[in-house]
Image 1 (cartoon, rainbow, N blue to C red):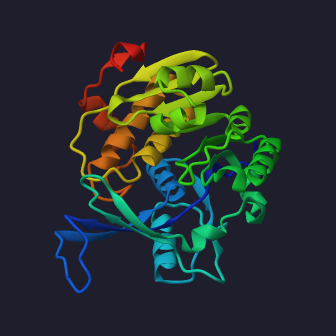
Image 2 (tube, rainbow, N blue to C red):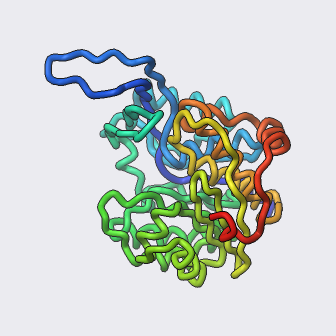
Length: 321
């Protein structure tokens, strides 16, 4: 369609990740703890997805909220460097840009998070035109029953524009695991979640059972299993690819980077196995460096990684899962 200016429009969160490396313990009151490094990177699932898919060569627009502060401008500048259209980003009149402090990223990560302007990302406030002008929309930020109706209404509106939709459900920190998610699954074109999320939402104790149940609700389901690879089920056809072996430095943003690689494959017409390879490669590159996006190169770099790193290519993931 002539009015489709963007390959992808991304909706959701953008914030600063302050990464504290080598933090063995938090200081007691009155104490000072010295760490090996502190790094500032862009975070937020939607932002990391956008940056990765832009590096792969797709034309991207971002739709979200930033504070009118140094960090908000920093994110805008970094987006512009990657030619991400920032026209539709709204500036908050009430909050600063969100910040998440990631402690001990080399092991079990702990976070101290200020939601800031991300708390103002509401479907009803978004620029509708950005969705009209995108071939595809990627959505994050689902909060179960708290914003289910608004998300469902926006999904149906986006579909009316002739635009496809991918949706990453994300972790439910409330523990609700709202059953309405199955309604979302039936509406969107590609539905992403990780293994633990699949088990929680399905109520199953075995991932194979969870996938069997969910694939009856979703025409295109993708389940990320970390170091065990990923599986996609499209209209009942199951495809599995194992993960690439790398030394993990920081797992922040690995799932969002996977989403970007996978959707690059989908939007460029690649078969399911190649989509999974791009997803696994972007996830592996992401964890190989501090920051959720730092380790991902351009398309040529990702393609070279895939070419130079072997992975077990099988169609029946139960053989090795």
